[in-house]
Amino acid sequence: MMKSAEIAFLTGSQNEPQAMTYTDPLTGLGNRNRMREKVQQISAERASDPAPFTIGIANLDSFKPINDLFGSAAGDEILCQVAHRLKACIPDGALVTRHDGDEFAFVLPLIFERASAEKFGQMIREVLSAPYDLGDRNVRLSASFGFSIYPFAGEDCEELLKSAETALYRSKRRGRGQITVYSREIAQEMKRATQLEQALRNAIISDAIDVHFQPIVSLSNNQVVGFEALARWNDPDLGFVSPGVFVPLAEERGFIDALSEALLRKAAEAALSWPRDLFLSFNLSSAQLMDPGTSSSVLSILGRVGLDPHRLELEITETAVMGSADTAHRIIADLRAAGVRISLDDFGTGQSSLGRLRDFIFDKIKIDRAFVSRINSDRASEHIIKAILAMCEGLELEVVAEGIEDYAEAVKLRTLGCGMGQGYHFGRPADGIATLRFLHENYYDSAMTERVSA
Image (cartoon, rainbow, N blue to C red; front, side):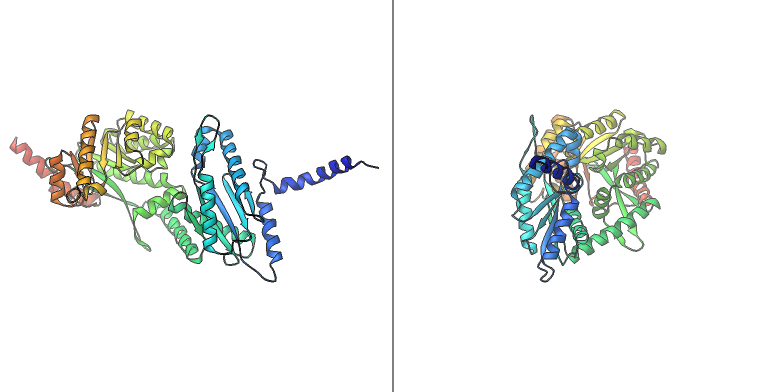
């Protein structure tokens, strides 16, 4: 006759494979199988009276860079702390599970409608925003959420999960820490985004994305000194698509490199036909500043086209360098060593402008149009621009004022000592042929006049 301890041991051994099937080995939470079982259980209980319930997905924002920076052991520790917090704060009868990587999910039997789902998401967002203790350092993270409500968003676990993932994707598109509850309107919005993605991929393959150029001038004499390259896309079916739409989409869907490489090649080829003393200004995305291969890719394109690296200026934003500062540092250093100049775009609108100037080496600052547009109507904007100009003079940085719309703004900026300007007052973005015509009408005539005067 077996003793009770032996029976318990054998029973535990038999149940162990089943427990592993339903448990996440890292955090001890349930997994997808456990979630599926819970949804089936609730659905069966409510078969005769199908009352709503909610499932949700939480995804940590920018977890991968943290994992890469501090190592996988630190990443695992953060995931375990997240699991502990979630388990401690979910309501009675609810379930929290861990799915792939940094994705967690909830089954919420007593949340019946949108407002309650959003309120739950806000509570979890606050819980997850507190610092994570890694021993010698603290790390902060945010999380994005997608929710779907049974039976409106699906009648089984797979449909509900798919709807919640659609809602989560919309949250990610809107920025960090966002909360979205699935609806048919959101599904249509995401469907249009997918259609747009396919059209954009095809446009890149067929080389149908155009580059336009906006002049940058010296404010002392209105002489053209360079051009900024700007992406333009006119689709046969979709019509004009704003770069504010398709560039972020390319970043989100992971093919910004292909888009940027095609645009840089076209822009560099166009710059070969300009006078050699004019520079080409080109924007780098935040995703590219997190990719260690960016510097070699840029220099390779310049080499194949035959454009001198000293004629290229790359514009980056404060937000972009914050994603992965160490990688961005190396990319900028490699490019500057090859002769490429680096410009800090939209200066004054980021979270840590002075810190960026201290931590990174830049050649030029571009004052954001938000200040320029109010320089003659708002004393605070005028004083901010004065302060930026004085600081840049001390740091030996060149300055470009963006978004100059009229003569009065140009005069004011020149009076304050700003070196360069850009905006509709000097010229709208134009294609390569129109840009050459602009040069013949402005640059060459001005250069000839100066030589005659001399």
